[in-house]
Image 1 (tube, rainbow, N blue to C red):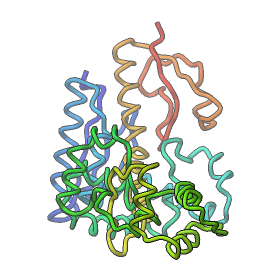
Image 2: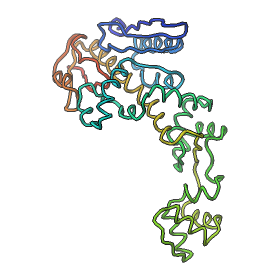
Image 3: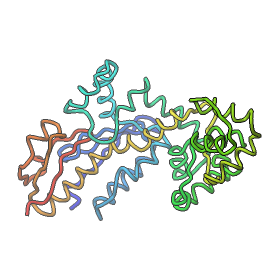
Image 4: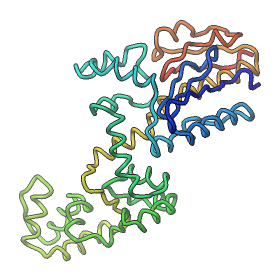
Length: 325
């Protein structure tokens, strides 16, 4: 089985860094990664080995944390950014989405929100690595960054991550937050309006902060919190932000860590699965739809019996392959 699966070639570029490419002739090529450390090379080799021996390994899940621990780059992604940057800068997003080379996986337009995504990721990586959080706690933190979760299910299912964040001061039980924060960031305006109504206080204000300021002129903040909590109990966790890192920046980094590996390795993972199906059944059928690129649409309905006839490689390929039995 392994003869149909990829072999990676590694080229040492310096004492600490490597480049990698999958061998020619395999359905998943080309895929060129660079700026790799020796540790990442070993992880890639072990992942390929796993696929060769038992199948079913997921490149995206395995490689995602690596993008947090080091600056890993992909030449195909570089080419993608170079081609589409002027198109996106001109505001022609719809035109970009119709292009054959626009990635069908994830939401790659977030990459164009910064001048250099690698540089942006390196800066944020350095900031968040200083937290010394485990990767699972870090990715959870980025998702709820500067926000609140009141969900008992989320708190129960991510108890370990929340405990780690709380221990390091990044997750705070909302019951311990200052009254002013509860009024401005926890209780919705509707609840505060009910408090005013209960106390027969008439306030004309459209914006929440203006409403809070006027309510505080009539009632002590602790009294307001006590009344509001009768309608909406104070529970959950607030995820404290880091100085100089806005919510937008944290959201961008979350997208980078979760979507870039998907964009890069998603297609590779699919190509591996396609190769397995072809090897196991001897012939497979290609399914393309209107969302596929024009090249892939030409393959729709075709019966393929050899590896070199599978749809061409491109980032985000969305062709489906099934056994033709």
